[in-house]
Length: 354
Ligand SMILES: [Cu+2]
Image (tube, rainbow, N blue to C red; front, side, top):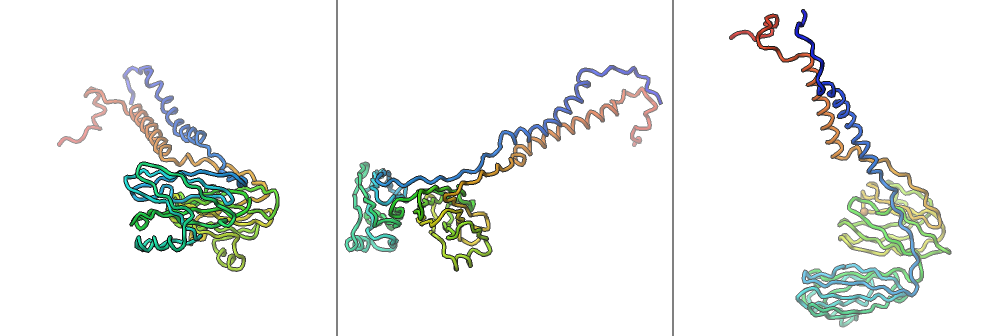
């Protein structure tokens, strides 16, 4: 069978078609490569210790709202210094900032206002300031050595504000000069950062880690007492029973809740810390504190950009377009449109007459 139609030289679009298909298919490779190059992750952060100021004072602003709340509700103080608290009443009601004198107690929110007043009448307060609506006040809290490692609750004594949630906690570092660090606990069951570094001038050294909850789950910050020992999720409970941790503190189960982990490190080494809440360590909630030991350079993890949704969808769409165009081109090239009725040799293709 011979085709007697004159063979046409392919038009510019037909000649460009293979190149277009090749370009689209190459794009399916180029897109994830470009995404991976753009999104090369950086090395994970390392927390670096700084020396606690021996005589430095610090200032913090606390807003008093009609919710009623203290914002922030967790304050961090350094012992042997003065913490100046700037109290701003942003609400329409009176509020007080009244700090319990007794350390490490938690007042009972089911007390009546009279019972709360009675508690402060008997036990006294470190500060008691009343702030009228729309005004502000200042108060100085002297955190001398005797407050080291302690936690003090503060409340509003205006009736029913404490009971409705207007309270907070002041956490103080251990007494004596030491090294300060900060770390965060997340709902992803991670410590961020999970590498801490301290370079003390002498041993033993007092180390104070301010741990902030960026999520809402309860956690602990628990540090192994032996250096260069690797805990495992299967054995840490038994291990801590026979080797008490350097420190174990509960991290408040509220966003923004803070606690100081204050402990003394006897000698240089790498100390592992974990969260003791069941399942959290197994999920990766662990970190390492390098004391007097250089932190090894962290390997940069490979980019995971290739599995980002937009890359997958984009590459898939390009691949589909390329395949579709190639298939259409091959079919139109192999089966050109049938001319109108003038070729009886094609009659066999006609559907049977009804
Ligand atoms: Cu945890």
